[in-house]
Every structure is written in structure tokens, then in C-alpha cells.
Amino acid sequence: MKSRLTEIAVQKLKPAAGRRLEVSDEGCQGLTLRITEGGKKSWSVHYRVAGRGDGGNRGPLRRMTLGAYPLLDLKAARDRARDALDTADRGDDPAEVRKDDLRAKGERTFEAICGRFVEAHAKASTVKWRDTERLLNALVVPEWRGRQIDVLDRASVHELLDDVKAEHGAGQAREVRKHVTTLFNWCVNRGYLIASPVAGMQRKDLRYRPRERVLSMDELKAVWAAAGDMGYPFGPMVRLLILTAQRRAEVANLERGWLLPDQNAFEVPARHYKTDRPQVVPLSAPALALVEALPKWNGGDFMLSTTGGKRPVSGFSKAKARLDRLSKVEDWTLHDLRRSAATHMARLGVQQEHIERVLGHEVPGVAGTYNRYSYLTEKRAALDLWGAQWK
Image (cartoon, rainbow, N blue to C red; front, top):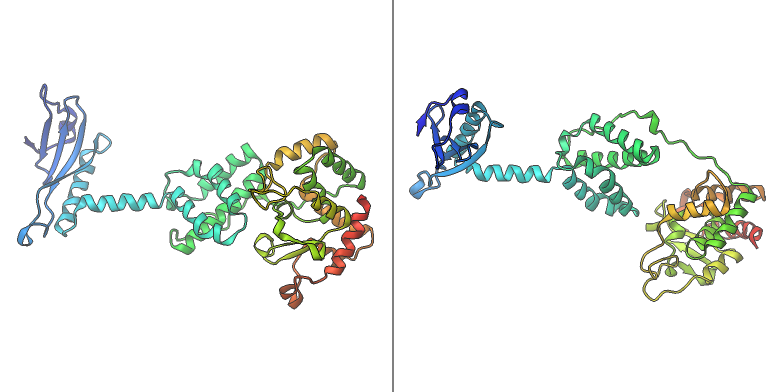
């Protein structure tokens, strides 16, 4: 059946009883309206691709579905049909071109780009890439799944950050913003975006405010005692944080291979250290006793572990909540132990320069670049003095 279709005619057309109806549109070559027995309507186009047949002639007649009516109205269907016919006249199969376009769009969805970002950037550039992957997959991908990377604008980012802040707090929103900013900058560098939607973004509510919490000696002793009550692995971990003034990740990831028995110390490899340089940490007498008492696992080298040494200890939030209940010390974080140790070493008379070396802050010049044992004597003296407070 042929007819010069109008929008009103398309609305009124119904199939013959017991069979499907197809109407060719005389207003657009190749365009066909198909109506099923149940009354559902859809558009398709028939075409022959130039040069695909014998002797350079047009190829066999093919059909491609354009879309369902009324989501695709008559005018839009004609436009799509003409585009398909133009493509066929150029010698390209419009169905194949559409598959390529859909594939390209799938590769440009946020979740696809996010996966590439983790593989190509996070894994290669950061020690804690798994944390980046978990955060993006938990808080960002579910919100932006299926959306093309180039349609995400500043409003989209603000809405995401507002939701994360409301549900998980400003700290998590700040982390999301940090990682999303890095991801968008990577996309610009890779050519997925012309410009980052977060460039110049202002969020005063997410500004980082450095903590200044220093636990008193009485508070530290309460935490120390509570850590003893907790037992392995969190108890020794917390006590080592106090005694060594190192970051949580460096102590929690302690491996047996890091120990330097001849030095009574352990060495954090550069790939595990924030400054990308190895850090040698002398062990005071109480710290050495703690390390020597840690179990030796057959299944892995991690010394603080709930998986037989296969993976480092985790679940810090629950452990910290229990530590709070046992110690009755309020408003503090595990990182505050590092600041507190540094402050009390200064009170005991340790020079600030030596405290900086204990903390592993970057050492300028040749000494910082080439000599991993730089200031080892001074660091040992500082930590021995501090360790003497805990015998």
C-alpha cells in the first residue's frame, strides 16, 4: 500500500483484521510505516547501497528500522530516512554506520570512560588506586551511568556533590570532587572533552580545613590502653601509629619484607610512600617488641591482617568506633595520632628538623634524593625518646 502520508493520517491508520499493514510513504522514497496486528506503529527505510552489487551496481534491497511512532513522528522519520538514503548513495551501509555510532556512544558513557581512567591513570599513577576505583564505583557511576561524558556539565557535578554531601558528609563529597576533577582533566588530555566542566568551580562548603587536634598525654594513654584491650590486629596497629608517628596506610600495609633486622627498623618502599621515596622508620624498644610479637603467616607477608597475611588489615571505621567506646576519647581521628606524637616529641625537646624527618616530609637536595638513611641517627634518637614514654 502506498500513500502520501500526513501526521493525521498516520494517527488514524489501523491494520486490517488479522494481518499486518505496511504503508509506503510517497512523500519520501523508501520510507515505510509498519502497523502490527495489535496496532503498534514503527518506521523503517528500504535502501540499496551504491557499489555493493555485481559490476559496481547497487547492492541488494535492505531494510533498517528507524524508530517507533509516536516517539518518532512523520517529519523526523522522513529526515532519518533521507539521511540513510544519502549514506547509501555514498556507498556506506547506514545500518553499519549506525552500529558504529552506537558502539562509539557506548564507549563514551561515563562508566566506560571511568573504567579506562582507572586502568590507564589511577593504577599507573597512584598507590591507592583501589580506593579511587571503589569511591567512583560507589558514589559516581550509579548516578551518571549511561550518560555520555560530553553531556556532563557543571550543574551535573554540583548536583552530584550536593547529594553526596547530604548523604555521606562533606568529607566524602570533597573526595568525590577531587577524583572527579582528576578524571575530567584526564579526559581533556585524552581528547574526550574539550574542557573540564569543573574548571574554576567554587564550592566554599567543601573547602578543606586542616585539623589541629592534638591528643593530650592522658588521652593518648587512654587510647593506648584501649588498643591493648582490642587485641590483634587493630590493637598493635594503633600502638605502632603512636610509637612511629607514621601514616595509617604505611603501618597497616606493613610487610615482613620491609623489616631491616640489622637496623632495628622497617623501610617503606617508595611505591607505598606518599612522597614516592623510601622511608626508613627506626623502631624504639616498645615498637620493636610489638613488631616481633606479630604473627608470621604462611599465606602472605602482611603483618597486620585478618586474612592470614594475604591482604592488609581493613575495616578501620568499625575498629575506630570500638576504640572510641573503649577509650572514651572524643573528636579525634587516627591521623591525629601522628600530629600528637610530633607535638609531644617537640615538648620533649626534639628539634623540629628531626621531627620532620621522622614524619617523612620531603628532604630537599641530594640527601633527600639519594640517601635513604639520611638522618637515621637523629630519627632513632627522637623515636627512642618518645618510645620511652610508653614502657
